[in-house]
Image (tube, rainbow, N blue to C red):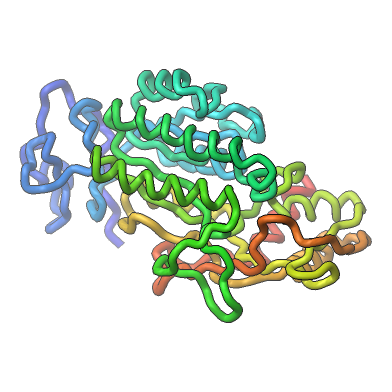
Length: 375
């Protein structure tokens, strides 16, 4: 496979790319160019490229860049893994997180960290205005279905109003691309037995959390039409892996791992009635989620929206028994009632072929997760 040409140099003020060959060498029909740096025939998807004087990558072009990436929620489970990957790829990273659920220790040492709440418009404007990111990877959110049911206003303030502050700042500063962490696990509602929810399936949000995520997806469509803001929506299934917080109400894999290793009993909440095998979920490993974010940021992922998932359904009881075996735990497995707002079955369709390739097998991901929780 031909290796992409690396072009992370900074252009001197006023310097313009006059021909694609100046960027990519002999890469044939590779589409590289930008209306703001002398290529009127091609559409630039990063409108601030001239201002930053960086060479940019268009979707489908064999050119890599070093970008400035703002990661909201970058002290959390998913965001911190994305921050690690961005730094490894040579990007500059700023993490914005209020540490309400994330941990300062999760933030990579080479990333700039700002403690702040996306509900604070002044903080968001200040961070985006000073850092001037090329792209924003928006992971910050209130992520618990149960919390959203109890506190729908708080859920909306964080997930909708906070995001609007971010999008407004992005438009004002000419940010080229927003990658949005949405939900596939909640947005489609009930997925009937034998079916998988594809992108063609109309969302049926039945919790305030799912409503807020779907609302942001709609706002992104509006901002694209009104301001030209480009976005990629990643609809996550149930994400699990190292660093997941076992102390919240979301993240059953982390909760089970911690309790099983401590010898404490675990509980299977009901799908319909207490004592059944529990809800059916599509579990996706953190490495696959990071891969989706990096593909979106780099331009390798050309689809504006994808399901990030495994495509396989697992009951809570199956998960509990598998983890009990992996941990060699003697913990008892008990039963609990159905939780308010939970869908009974959620399994997503990754597409054919999956745009990111095959997902990590559940057994492999769970083994790695248990090893991490063991320390």
